[in-house]
Image (tube, rainbow, N blue to C red; front, side):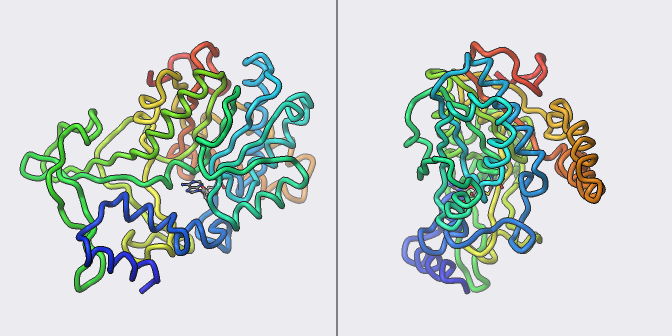
Length: 359
Ligand code: SAH
């Protein structure tokens, strides 16, 4: 039993079953034993690999996107360049390098990194060399200013609540501890308005999820960019429209494992409900979500792949494989989505088509 499992078991024995959100918050964020507090989970030797770790092209394209949007905003100086959960700092380093083609952008950018993990803050410091950056524990600490914000695989780590439709009512799904360890149990009924509006009508047996922390953060980002100007780019996995289903998953050493098996030792995530985030972010408007593969192709990843391969002939095959991993429908191309939340006066942003947007 992991140290965190023992703590959670004792807590449940003393005070009764806990919500899925409480479990997830402790498993990922417990100050001593939380998954993200202890170690660097990324890369081949870790538990999972993210897009910026697959190819430098990912961060570079986001960098060019930022330069283009910054110009559309009227090139504010200074402005906030914010990243939520920057991992090893790879995306931000690639972004800033690509953005050097417009030196005024880098000079005007105040870089703010929202990161709770100390090992990852150290990795970010190393990746960004002597670039001046400020770290924060939460987005609420970032000062008000025109803002460009990036969040890649951040919202999927925020705690979700789960609800089960039983006997005509919605019940909170709880986690208890029995003879065989942790187990899901059906908790008391909840008021229907706790369940996201689009999911309330359901058959018995249906599962609904909500992410109060994600929606609260989207609302804060929305107020910030709508009030001070700017846009946020949210890249993550999940469906474009809210739907029923249990998406809680645990990954350890590149393999799925049962989500209750080893709290604190495995990455624990849930699908991001892009529709819910877009709605929560009003008065900011949403662009997309569009599939990651389509978005990257619209921004020229295939041309960039060819250019990079010509410059590094010995690595041409590796570069082509990396591009495929990012855009192929069988890999990250359609599971991952890109959503922008922007100040309403901005035109359609690069990579998004005019007909899209949830509100
Ligand atoms: N964006 C990076 C890393 C994704 S992993 C990449 O694409 O490679 C999730 C990141 O979010 C990690 O850096 C983790 O430490 C951070 N994180 C997770 N929960 C957080 C929270 N509640 N507050 C701040 N950072 C958090």
